Image (cartoon, rainbow over all chains, first blue to last red):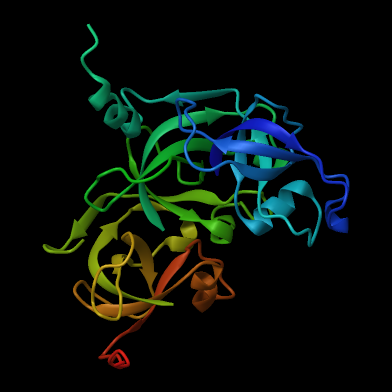
Length: 107
Length: 92
Length: 93
């Protein structure tokens, strides 16, 4: 699963019948610090998420279809939870250290 | 499966009810030599792993074969705590 | 399926019960020319392979099929040891 932030909504009147009534949200994958990483994606909402929420996204067909409870729906990505908090251990994550190195030099 | 390091926990109160009572951990995928690679993943922990440990992560629909995850909407699961990785010289 | 070289192994005592007793190998996927291709990964072994050998492996849900009806939590499985392989030379212009 991925951490992501909900950045927008998508309205599509004409869509596959199995997706009728499904809420489609634009999500931007983020790292542990909330920085965008990777391309924005489109997910079906199964957690009553809203724009600005940090969410958990599954990116696999059967998991997504199980989450939205629409058997045989043509979907491969779904929001399964709203993230309250991410706690990182010690000086982790590793990526933060890597990213921090070049920006050194502040007094 | 990939090797990863446990770097954090994720708290989500509002989530799919089939995920309730599952521990969600933030892991950093890594190379066999320990170098980090790629984006963080949130994985369900089935083996009681902890901070800083090196773990095995299985992804895709195979993740639901671990523990009691059948029919839960997850695509990544921690299925092992790694004691050691032995890579032959000149390997990767 | 893909060719790979076994570059190491992983020891894990504490693991999902479906993986108990399974040998875990570190694979480096490779091209037919023998060059590394993509990131190393960890796979279970259904073929009795060892470090240094060239193998082929299957990814995804199918990786657990050799164990059916048992459900084994793996997304990669070594299903054969390669004795030798040949590649047709590039068609010349």
